[in-house]
Structures are given as C-alpha cells and as structure tokens.
Length: 110
Image (cartoon, rainbow, N blue to C red; front, side, top):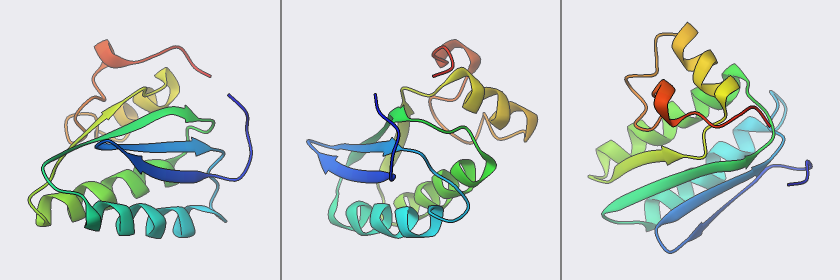
C-alpha cells in the first residue's frame, strides 16, 4: 500500500478507497464516490483496506455515502476498516451506524 492522493473506484460491486484523505481532499473524494454510488445498484461494499488515514473527515464522508446509498435503495457495507478508524467511530458513537465497523471487524492499524 502506498500513500498519495486519495482515489475511489468502482469494480464489481466494490467501491475501493485508497490513499491519504485530509480535510483538503475529502470533498473531492466524497463527490467522486457519490457519482460512483449513483451508477451502482443492489449491494455495494466499500473497501477501505487501501486507505492510509483514520480521520473524522473520513467518517463524515462514509456517512454521506451511506445516506446517499440508502436513499437510492443500495445496501452499503464496509470492509478492510483499520483498527484506528473503528476506534474513532466508537469514540463518536458511530460504529453501529456503519456496517462493518464493529470491533470484531477491525484490522490492525496501517
């Protein structure tokens, strides 16, 4: 895994997020993801294994994506969530709102 500009791409029902997300880059990434979610149907998995950062702006983006997916009738779940991001979600009382953010699903911090 390499750090760098954040990216999101859709492949076979999986929204793959990679790179380092910051307050400066999150809006553009969120919009990219929203466009891709708009083209999807059915169940969609968000793969965060290539995500370098665990930051509150990432949680905000994921909640925006989840809300959009729900409105479109798409089931959104998350995989490859780092332990740091799970901890941040727990501190914000959000782990129950994001499928795949339970403590049992956490991967070691990147």
